[in-house]
Length: 119
Image (cartoon, rainbow, N blue to C red; front, side, top):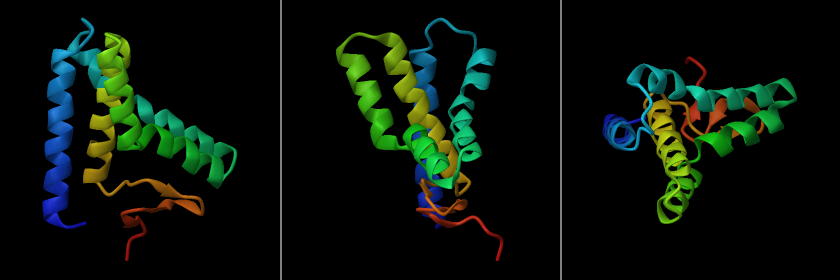
């Protein structure tokens, strides 16, 4: 991935983390540090098969879904839903900095950003 795209993802992750500081639900920062990685639980779908793993992973790492959840939470004044949407967005951006994109059905290492295989 090009440096400019990585910097863009860093900026989006930083913005998401900043917004989580504002919409923190009164939770301490140390707990948010743990919760930040909670979307990765979606990788458990790979225990079933690669297609289910990709579907589960992509639901929790799709920025469009994250934005939709945050917007609905904002308009419904549902702070928990808003925070979840922000968290999903920030986490997805953070993952993309390291090349972890949305998964294809044929395996975890084949993403929309390219292969995670070392060449």
